[in-house]
Length: 263
Image 1 (cartoon, rainbow, N blue to C red):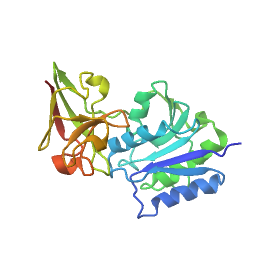
Image 2: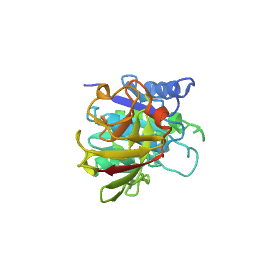
Image 3: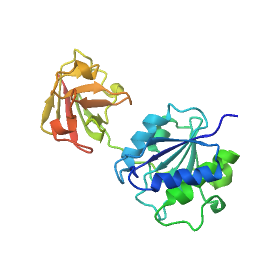
């Protein structure tokens, strides 16, 4: 039988013992589990950043993978711990919207409020539910594969109020969703939102201190030092600078507005 796969996505970084503690809890309950990291460099407290990271990576994992997502600025408050099933995979996370993009992609998802505290470590810390609730719940789920045993099914899982595009004729206004470690700026703009955009299209995109008029198909096609528009691997348009940082070149970051005019 194939060993269970459990992934971890957090904003914990790598300097502290938090990730190691979660892995130890899982291994203690289910030594045969294969535990993998998606990322521990989610921007601290940034639920949208976590939502984008887990949605982009989780689709490439096998069926029945269990994804533990801990970006949890509300830890210890009344926010619910959540178990969800979507697209043949499982997700365990705080009910704060961090699974919003997974739910958008897989509208037939199911969700349960985790209330069965016999699956938890005790005592439960008010500041570390990743260790005491989410990690052990993942391990026990991989042992029994019975999501219904974790608590009542719910139909009102939290969803993030994602930035919305404003489209008026040939003008589009939107915002930056995140900046990756290369400084590429992910926009809330997908190819289907602007089918007029093509390599030969004439457009002007204003963001921060920059005005962008070039669409490229690959990073290496862009002149070095020039911010360009590119269709990124996650299905959103991005602003990139060949061998440099678009965030630095434009002075823009997450939440920054942009205006796109198709000419």
